Amino acid sequence: MSVADDSLHFAPPAKPSLAMGVIGNCAFSALVDIRGRIVWCCLPRFDGDPVFNALLDPTTPDADGRYATESRPGAFAIEIEDFAESRQWYEPNTAVLRTQLFDKRGQAIEITDFAPRFFSRSRFFKPMTLVRRVRPIHGAPRIRVVLDVRFDWGRREPLITQGSNHLRFVGDALTLRLNTDAPISHLLSRQPFVLTREHNFLLGADESLAEGIADTARLFEQETVSYWKKWSQRLHIPLEWQEAVIRAAITLKLSLFEDTGAIVAAMTTSIPEAPGSQRNWDYRYCWLRDAFFVVRALNSLSEVGTMEDYLRWLSNVVVQSKGGHIQPLYGIGLERELPESMMQHLDGYRGMGPVRVGNQAQEHFQHDVYGNVVLGAAQAFHDHRLLHRAGLAEFKRLEDVGEQAVRNYDKPDAGMWELRTRARIHTSSALMSWAACDRLGKVAVVLDLPERAAYWKSHAAIMQERILREAWSEERQAFAESFGGRDLDASVLLMIEVGFIDPRDPRFIATVDALETHLCDGPYMRRYEAPDDFGKPETAFNICTFWRIDALARIGRKEQAREIFNTMLAARNHVGLLSEDTHPITGEMWGNFPQTYSMVGIINAAVRLSASWESQV
View 1 (tube, one colour):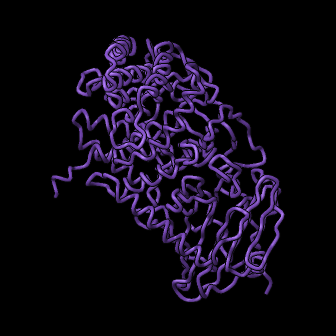
View 2 (cartoon, rainbow, N blue to C red):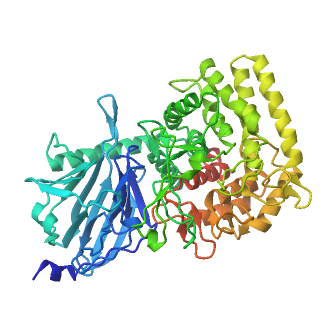
View 3 (spheres, helix red, strand yellow):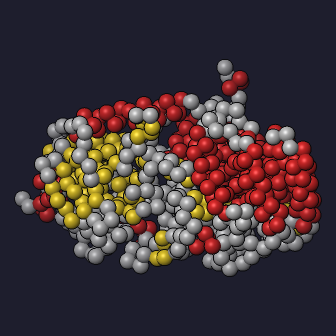
């Protein structure tokens, strides 16, 4: 029987979906689908070339598992013959993913996937290495290993060389090595073989292992499991929804690029915000807005290490701005220019292009950024646990940021939703500029600088009065999305997040009611009601739903908030992850994945709504 005949017994790959787990080590990440196929992995870092890009290239293989088109998707699959079903879960309190595949006779295999991360030699060991371990758990099933490494966004196949226990995938800019104790011949030919014992696959830098393949894989797994369990153990979590909070926290930690301290908004690019909408963006960069919310959420769980890492990156952004304009986002290596282009040869997620690389939003003026900078750094002046507390030098740098807030809070900008063809004086931008001045005033008090405290408090007071006056719409009986405007926008709910207004203020309660009437589809909330560059949004924006949950809890409607929160928990995928958007009718996830904003919402809502530990213990 030929290999092609054998292939008739192997199911085609699962259709692209966001039913995936994420693995990573704060240096890079990979996405693993429900059948244990790695369909997305950018190397050598989050914003790199996807060596596995099948998520955005839904090309169908032939009976031999091979592809006829020039755009051959990169993927790493371990398949079982006569596939029947799969199960997937995380090892509790870790970023180690396990997938079980069953055949029609009840035979089964288990795949363990992770990226090593643990403390060694006085630093965190986080190599550019994917570890896959596969073992039989029932019977003696046949498996097939299909490994397609691709370079240049799928346009180039590597030169493959082999050794006794390794394969090398040689590209122009990157060479990868697979160290394995599985039969090299079967990997090269895609020959199915009976799995009688555990096999290990370590894909990473073109380097030899210091120890044996199986011993290295086993040690890496033990140490990585131990690291994540100890990390999770130190979290100060709410009594209720503990597993959801821990999974969200781990996912946020995985979004940290520890080398520089940047935090990516999501691991992917170009997952549409809605079916066929062309709202496809590259989120593999660091937005100062998103990063602040990540830091704030982890701080609420007493995980301040991520904040300390992020402040390294943020301080460089502030210094290089020299008191002038700060972009809303930068590359994870502090790159200022992120030119946007399209990969025309890729069809996109489920054939819904375009696939964008880079993000034009780096050119935008989004004046809320100054508040996000100050808010992201504020705790460092107050928290005595930190290894490196902020002081006078840092305060002086932040004052330059505050002056930018003063100059720009009432100037038109693209707003936090990054509108490309419309500029207004956005309420959310003015609000965050107020927050910059308010927090600088409080920091000045801590530093015993009464004149500076009075200076910043006076600016905050001026801004507050103007926002309350000019953002309020008598017609809509709500705070509008811009000064003198009438359109509604969920971002005004951030007024209570940053302490701008008492949540029991009748104007805020009226705003919540208006937003529920005009922006909500049942439990889900859209960002805004006015058409944008692509028309009216079709899907709900998850973080807006979580802002609504927080607002409802604070104004006393806690039962309604809990009901909506339970709906959002049910909207997560099978391993507890959320993307950016949820379709209000189908409940399907859309938008880039996993989205830090959404995972932040899970933590914030659980902390806000949970019963206290004292109520039980």
